[in-house]
Image (cartoon, rainbow, N blue to C red; front, top):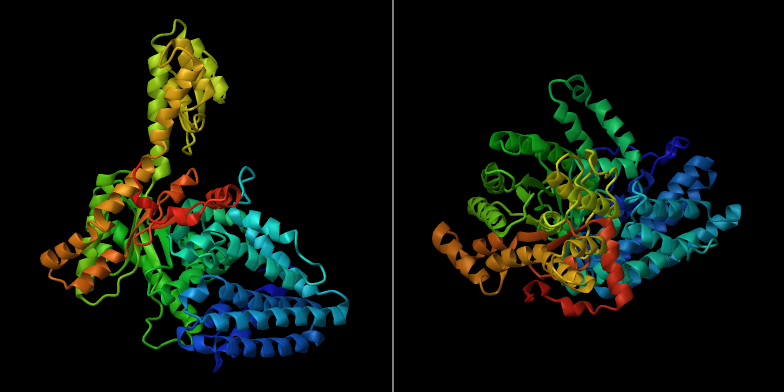
Length: 631
């Protein structure tokens, strides 16, 4: 929360040692300093769950008194600090109603009592405000801020909508102006618990991750336990949330060497900018990491792609980022883990490094990092053989680590199913177009007409074409073959079952004598291609994690690596297949598994998955262990 007009809306820097002696005092202290989320997360302490409602009641008492004391403060200070008090209470309520309460094992009766206390307290504070100034000004302000944060996700792209923005619009319509915070809280809880992801997480059908750098806290309430980020996604986050620039500027003031040495080490500046977008996500997922013993709650960070094929360069990058993150989170954990068991290791980054599987170096980079207890997420991975080889490298490295008593974290093997399908579709479309062109008397003219129908800009016969491909770059096409490949790119052919393509093939007399026959042919291929990513994920998961093969791997590890069955279980259970780059709801619904699987989702894909459930009445239980289905 920040505003150039109100200095009180900026977070204050916290002392290195928390000045408090109990959870409730710490929560209120943090809220008044601008860290209401951190205050709410601290009371998820697993050692105090039997007293959870009591702690919440103490927070309500202290928060109410602080709220009243602010009556004599300046209007700016009053607005900021009262808004943060509201947010503290709302964040505690959302943690209590969300999956966090399950992870912390808070008893149901404690949850019910705590939620009741918070609802009453929020309503009471709104009445206090109305008695002072006729309307709950601070409540209205913080509700607007929290809805605004939801709407930020993918807001820089007017062509799409995120699930959180869609939820925000639904909640906003039901806000009661007289009780904005109370009505917001009620509707937010209702929307969270009605969501397909909340229900799937609650049922234990699968784990889920966010393939974006914003909106994670709301998703955490629904059970999301992973986030992927990279410089591109970080750049999108800066577009959606310009306040990140203020945090980046503050960081550069403390680290002027990044600007002074920009010519010698330009990548360091990009790394710092990405970390500024990354650390807030790590903060959000830290409670999940600690409550779930680092078997969830991980943030994927992409190593510098410029050194992806350099083992030592990649390791240096990883160690540098890991050290910076460790330093940052030792300070952060002094507050998050205040009062938590002392045996918990403070500062360990809940990070895994994205290692591009595009070169042979990725095998050694993966093995070396895993051997240090630093997790990896292999990406740019499309095929069964590629993913199997990298999982074997993970196993070898993790075995080295577990022998030394290193606590292993959750790690991932990304399966870029959507991209695989898009590449296969392009290849098949180009093959069909080229085949047809060989039968046409005026192929250049016919191709130009097809390209225009598909939306290829500047597709004139006899001229060079230059147009986007849908992969982040444009292609210049001069020859007939090049133009065929351009027309077949994913920017223009989203499905093979395209009427324009079918008409073109019919004119050439290929694959059918009627439009219906040609379309039926195209639909068969489209159906097969649309399952390609799912089938790769299914095969990789089956090889390692199926009921049939999992025990065999445990025996293999015990026999060949000299570890005991418990250690072998630790090595294997922490590796998840990570289906990614989804294009349609079935990409998620057909890759669910209760173990060794995390589905990572773009924000607009999340909405499509939820609407598939909400509008079509899917019975989620029917997709239990869907990864084992035959297709």
